[in-house]
Image 1 (cartoon, rainbow, N blue to C red):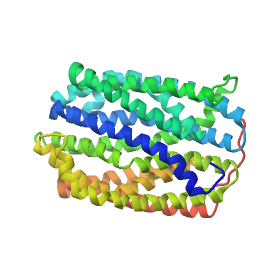
Image 2: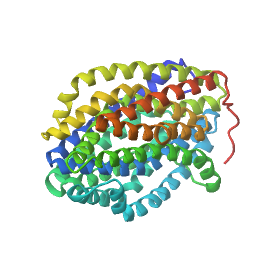
Image 3: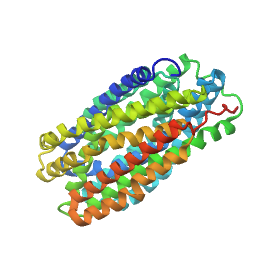
Amino acid sequence: MIVGPVGRVLARTTAPLALALLVMFGLQLAEAWLIGRLGGYALAALGFVLPVVMTSMSFGIGLGAGASAVVARAIGAGGHDDAARLSRHVLVLAGGLGLLVSVPGWLAAPWLLDGLGASGEARDLALAYLRLWLPGLVPLLVGMAALSLLRAAGDTAFQGAALAGAGALSFALDFPLGLYWLGFPGFALAASLGWSVMLVAALWRLRSLGLLGATGGGFLAAARRVLRIGVPAAAANAIIPLAAGIYTAMLAAQGDETGPAAVAGFALGSRTEALAMTAFFALSAIANPFAAQNAGAGRMDRVAEGVRLSLIFCAVAGLALAVPLWFAADWIAARFTDDPAVTASAALYLRIMPFGFGAVGVIAVVSAALNGLERPLAAVAVSLARTFAIGVPLAWLGGRLGGEAGLLGGILAANIIVGVGAALFLLRAADQSSFPAGAVKAA
């Protein structure tokens, strides 16, 4: 990533990952359609489990951000042996982290759902789902770490194929396990099996690239290097689903009649949003190793150019997505459920939230680039501003003034405000080269 035209490098590395995410999120959206065949309570249960699932996965995302930054910087500086040793330590660290999160999460699942406002049949379904999903968190987090190492090495083509393959396998298993055997909890088992197969494939690829050498000594030192970025990055990523959990609780509190439909509509809208934003997520995933490799090579001019091109893309593509989604909102929502209340809530989401897609993409790119430049606390500040400092207060105020639509409008306003501020901050910092490359420290 340190040679060749910046725009071409970003496009070449982003494209395969974007295609993979398009497949994966498309399959997740199709899965939401299948869950809708099980009834409104199953969709409401999906809305309650998503904050728990995404918060748990944020630990893997954070660890991956730290691993990608440290290993990519070592590769950029020409230290392949150092990169191989770090990679092996990262995988061990990921396994331990998976156990550390999954066991307490499994025990605390009932209280987590109570805190989100789940009740009745929707709560029972959500609890059964989490009881099956959380044991699979260990192979999931190790697999996510392995994919981040492939991304650090620039092998986004294999990473993309592994993601798409895991999504396809999980979706194929949804039919026997979820639709015909276990019901809603069966979708959790299907996901765990898909990720486990992806882990095996990723480990094979890392070995073929020479990134699974002997572990050797220095695990604690390597863990410190990775966690110095990974812990703040995990916190930054956990903040988003935690805020989503608060938004879910706000929607659930609207009443026995309105609340479950609003939660279900929020879940469907979020799944549709993920599919629409695949290019933004892929670009943000590349921003981390791109910034790290070029910083390791002392090419901050390439980092600055990459930042400018990425932000322009987010702004243009965000508007290009928002307008057609506004017109198609009712049609899209009606494809997933026959419940008129859930359809109305999902359509409302798709008429409001897409106008912040570009800003959300900017926030993702800025946060990833800051992690790649080993400035994770700045990325945490961006996430905190988007959620608890601005997002939650504006959502609460909007909900008080305008109900469900006002709550969504408050979230949208926060995304735009923080997106503009984050873009200006990173552009100024990159142009002034205020993030020196520094030397790659020995583990």
